[in-house]
Image 1 (cartoon, rainbow over the protein chains, first blue to last red):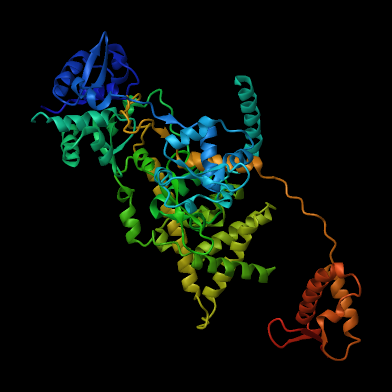
Image 2: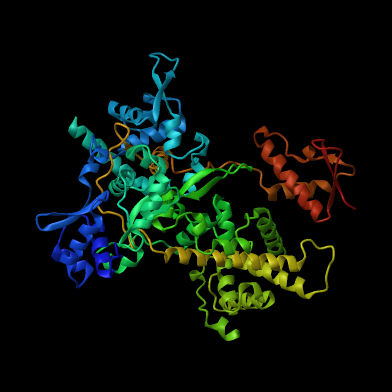
Length: 195
Length: 195
Length: 242
C-alpha cells in the first residue's frame, strides 16, 4: 500500500470528522479541488479487510465499522445517560453529609426528591443503604460506595472540596444564587404541573 | 503490508466506535482477550501518514484527524472556549507543577486567583481536585485530567512544551511558600516603617 | 532603556499586580531574565510608580508595598554590608529574579500550550460516534465538577448570605487610655490592671479589661508606665514611670 497523497488524506479526514454521511459535493466543499471519486475508490481499497471501512449509502459516503465487527459493538447498546440535576444534587448531599436520611436530604435541598432519584444513584452503584437512624419511624440512611470514590477519582471523602474551597472557586456566588432560586421556582412549578 | 488479524481489526473497530478515549483495559473489555498493546502499536504504524490516526493521550487511546488537516476542517466550527490570561497561566501552572494548591498558584502569579478562574478550568474538564496537602489547613490540591491531555494533544505530561528545560533550570521546583512569605513579611514590615 | 520604560503606558489597571508589572519592566531590558540588572529594574519600577503618583492615578496598596520593599532592597544593595543580616540583599535580589523567571516561564508555557493542535479546533474526533455497548446495564455519567458545583449550588441556596453584626456596646481604647492616664499619677506603687477598671458594670467587664490592657501597652510604649508580670497568666501590674 503506497501512502495516500494529500488529497486522499484530506478526503479521509473530512469523512472521518463529519457528523453525517457526505455527498461527493459536500466532500469537495471541504477537501478542495480534486478527484473525489478517485479518492473514495482508493480509500475503499485501502480499508478493505480492516476493522473499519468506507461505505456508500445512496449518494452519500461515510466511515463505518466493518459489518462482522458488529457483535463487539451493537448488542444491547445503551446510551450513556447524564445524571439529572436532582440526581447530582442528591448525590452531592449524600457525599457531604453521609449517612443521611431522605428527609434530611430534602431538608438540605429544600425540595422533595422523587423515589426514582435515589434508585438511579443506587443503580449507578454510587449510593447504598446504610442502616437505619434510631429515631421514631427508623428511617433508612444512605451513604456513598467505594464505586462512588472510584468514579469521581477521589481517594476518600475528605478530598471533596470544603465550603471554603467552593467559595474561593466562585461556586457560592450570590449572583448564581438569584439565578438558582429562579430555576428552582421554575422546577417546582414544573413538578407541580406534571403531578 | 499484511492485512490485520481479527484481534487488530477488533481493536480498530472498538476505538473507532468509542465515544471517548479508551484505556487498554476498556479496549480489552470490548475486543476480548489478546495483546492490546501490540495491536495498538500495529495500528499506530498502519495509520502513519494517513489523514486520520490513532493517538495516545495519557493512558487512553483514540482516533483523531491528522494535525495538518486543520485548515480543511476548521471552517464553520466553533472556537473552543477562550480562556482569560489568568486562566491560561493558572492552567499552565497546574499542568507544570501538579499537584499544586491555590496558595502555590497565587505565589507564582503574585496575585490572588479571582473567583471563577479555577471554576472555568474545572468546568472545561481540564482540572480536577487532587487530594489535600498534609500541612496545616490541609489545603486542596489541583491537577490536570485525562481530558486536558486529550485536548492539548499530549501523550503524557512529559510532552508538555519545554518541561525538561524548565525542570533542569529549577523553575519547576516545589514552590517554597515559606520563602515567599518571608519576603512578604519583610515587605509588610518595611511598608509599616515607611508609613 | 529609559525610553523603553517611557513607552509603557501608565495604565495601572492593565497589570495583574506588582509582579506582573515588574516582569514587563524586566522584559523591557531586552536581555535574558537571568541577566537582568535588579538595580535597574528597581529604578524602573520606582520611576513608574512616581510618575503614576505625579499623574494622581490611584495606585493599589500592593504596588506601594512592593515599591517600599524595592526601595529597601535598593538601599541594602548599595549600602555597606551588614554581615549579620539574613537573608542577605543579594539573596533577596536572587529570589526576586527567580520569581520573575518562574512567572515568565509559566506565561510562555501557557502560550505554547494554547498554540498546540487542539482537539475540537485543529484536530477532530468523530462528530457522532456510535458508542460502544456498555458493560454495565446503564452507564450513568457525572463529572466531579458537576458534583461539587451541585453542592455549591445547594449551599448557596440554603446558606444565609447576609451576616449582620450586632452593634455591641464596648469600652473604647480611647476611654481606657484616658482613665489609666488620669489614675496612674495618683498611684505610688504597682497596681493590678484590674484595679483600673471602672466600678460596677459587670456587663462591660471583659471589654474594659481588654481595652485597659491595650491602653497599658500603649502607655508603656510611650514610656509613661512600666509593666510587670511574674509568669504567664499571673496578675499584670502597672506603675507610672518616673
